Length: 174
Image 1 (cartoon, rainbow, N blue to C red):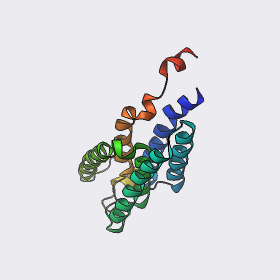
Image 2: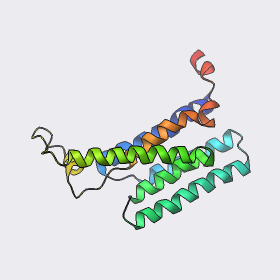
Image 3: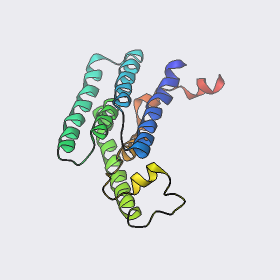
Image 4: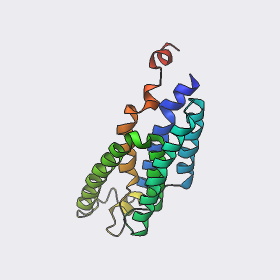
């Protein structure tokens, strides 16, 4: 039951925290990425995932990390975004990686367009006192892409083996 609760809650909670952190502070702590990586390793071992499968998931995470840091070096994404994307890829492995990246890209594009439009309008006086909203409204501020990464991840996660392994009937009876 604890394993099922961990599968059900750990990844979604950490990705949601990453999105909220990026929205409110424009940063994603390394601790979130480390917690995602450690959570994957613990759950993979506790679930009986084989060494080959674990290494394939690590390969997916490493590939996204390499590409993410290339994007970071070009100034296209933040370092926290690159690390969280890699940590999410670790959970998805190659089986769900392309769908995750597609969703994250589509939501990222939509988020970017919405924020660019939002930044064209004056910020209402009632909202101007919120530091996070003022920062989000500033034209020189980047895009909190962690939001798109989290939404994309949460769209894909129900399709993964992590969720398929959860025994919802047993959880409901408790």
